[in-house]
Structures are given as C-alpha cells and as structure tokens.
Length: 300
Image (cartoon, rainbow, N blue to C red; front, side):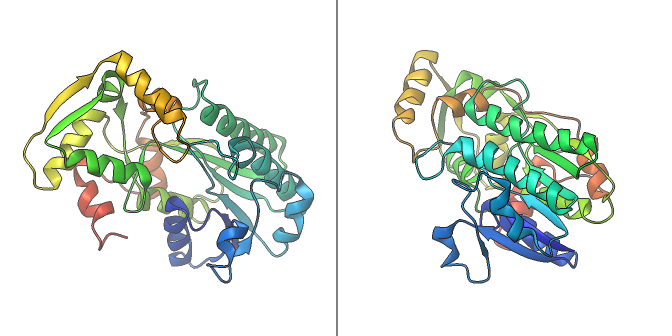
C-alpha cells in the first residue's frame, strides 16, 4: 500500500516507517515545513495550522492508508497541543472519510482515559472522533494506546537511562510507585505494520503494553542492572518539593518535566499484554531485555 505517515521523522515515526517498508509498503512521510527542507522527498504539512479537511485532501491522492504518529508533551506557540493532538488529526480523519481512504491508525497513549491533563484530553478527543467515524462505517480506524515507549532516540527513554546511571535516585513518591508496562519501540512499529497486513480487518481501541507491569523505581533499577551497575540508593522527594519542581518546569517549555508530566507519570500505566501479543504473533519484549533489544546501537 501507499501509506501517508505523519510525524515520520519523530522517535516513533522513524521506527514505524522502517517496519512498514520492511513489510513492502511505500511510505510517504509527512513532516513540518521547517523540517521538510532537511528531509527531501517528505510531504510538507503544518499540523499547527492545517485544521481543515480541505488542507489534507490533495495530500491523500493515491494514498491507501494513513498512520498518525504526531505527538507533543508540552504546549508551545510553535507546536500548539490543541491543534497537533486534536483539531488537525480530526481534520485529517474527516478528509480520509471524504477521499475514500479507509485505513487509519492513530498512535495515542495509554493512561489518558481518566486523566484531566491537557495532553490527555486533546489526545482523547482525536481518538474518540476516529472511533466514531469507524462506528459509522466511514473509515476503518484503529487507535493504539501504548504504555511508555522505550528505544534509542526517545526523550523519555533517554531520561530513564540518565536516571539509571545515578548512584542516588530521588523521585516524587507517586512516580516511584506508579506501575508501567514499557513497550519496545520496534514492537509498537511491528504492531502498526500488522494492522496494515495480517490484522488489516482489526478496528477499534487497542491498549498496547509489555508482558509485565513494574513500578517505575524497579524499572529504573532494572535499566541500571542491564547497564552493568550495582543497586542505587532510592530516595523519595517530598510532595511539596515535587509539586514545586513541576511548577518551575511549567515556566520552561523546553523541559519535559512539568505539572502535566508529574500527573501522567504519577498514575499507573498498565494494560492486558495479550492485545499486543496477538498483533505481533509472539510475546512483546520484556522490560528486563529493553537495553539489548531497543537501546543497543544494533537494535532495530
């Protein structure tokens, strides 16, 4: 198939493009106008402003399917979260319905169902719209909601690796205790490829998680052990300081740490691993093997 992949130069997008091309598809990568000059052959698109279906219809000519891998953690003037997560994806999905492009895969995030954060509400709105179009029979849509996605090139993965190198780990209590089920980025990418092949008839919401849930503190300890280091000393940051540090982060948009990050990381992020296993046809990568599978330079 000819597949339009938005966010193709991002952490997840790059892995998805490789998986789709390995499966024999032709990928038309979509990138922001400022990145298009650095990526010849990519389709220039402005997720900050292309909020009407008419902007997308010309780009869908000759396209058989669409994968949306665009996402941001923080709201900025250059990358407004309302547009990137909600208004532009909704316009893209509506354009697909008008153009007869039936297959759509939306890469969302686990843990947004009950969250009141702006990240969650905007992501959830686009997910709901796609699922509504699918229920109406206008498109054949899938919403993938992965737990924390791990791999080389990921900002959160780099943060976890940096924390794993510290001999003393100090984190907010809710973050230390929150349970996650990390997904290797290549497993998520292979799941997208399956949805364009062996699982082409699958629709609806799919929660994607690794084989086993683990508290965040134990995940970081495992990454430290996989790196060849001994156990670190773990300290709990008092709640007052946790919230203060997050509010300070709110003032610096370039930082990944902010009040929304604290809220998201401080909540459990788990699901039944069977759904991802069915898509892959085998068990997903266990968190105890993330470094050799998804972080090593030789990893896919």
